[in-house]
Image 1: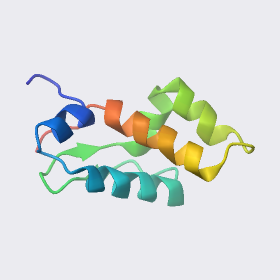
Image 2 (image 1 turned 180 degrees about the vertical axis):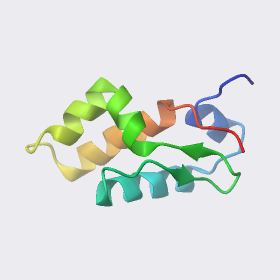
Image 3 (image 1 turned 135 degrees about the vertical axis):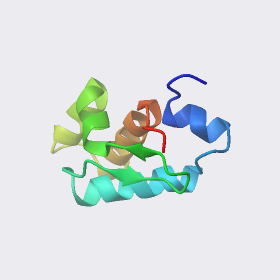
Length: 86
């Protein structure tokens, strides 16, 4: 699989959904975090993923958006990101 997304790696059972949840939690605590390592050794840049996904970027910047909505949008951005293989 050439340049799989995080979502593709979940489908392939290379990355667990719980790990994506952990990446979201890390981002929600520190929106500048630029490196998250999955157990498989793959790495993703949560801040970069959100920056690159306009709907997520807007949701995170919106002070009126609820935490659940914002974290869901961060999750979407991370799922669409293309992690770096180990």
